[in-house]
Length: 201
Image (cartoon, rainbow, N blue to C red; front, side, top):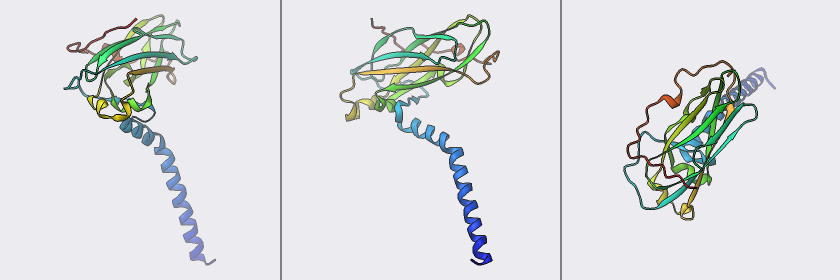
């Protein structure tokens, strides 16, 4: 192989390695963006406001709460389930209690089941948008305001869906001890106008 051939080969290898490094660096952000846009894996959507249209069709939304073993909190849904109309604004609550004598920060992951409903499950306000810090022994109610996009009823794949489960899992945030949140999500002012919460036994 000539000197020029070796140079082109080395240059090609460098380009390939550079491309692989770039793809690796952006793989997670691109995957997260894909999930947010498509609702893949039950990823929910973020809405700027309430729906302008409310349908008669009702859906039961159930609430699930889990906590990673490394996070010393008790975490539960305040209500087990609610019955809502599609497009109707709903305000629900989860509750967390710190079981430690020091401050701990947690971060919540979330999804809905069935996964195919994620594309239409719109959150307006949610504690999951930011990390949350509980002081030693503190108990806090976390709000989540959401609605189901009326386009849900236009998707024939969802004709058989009458129940959606919203799940959260709290994990301990990296370096969380004594890390105080500057502006916890639960201090945000959330308008209850037009929102409903119809708890089911």
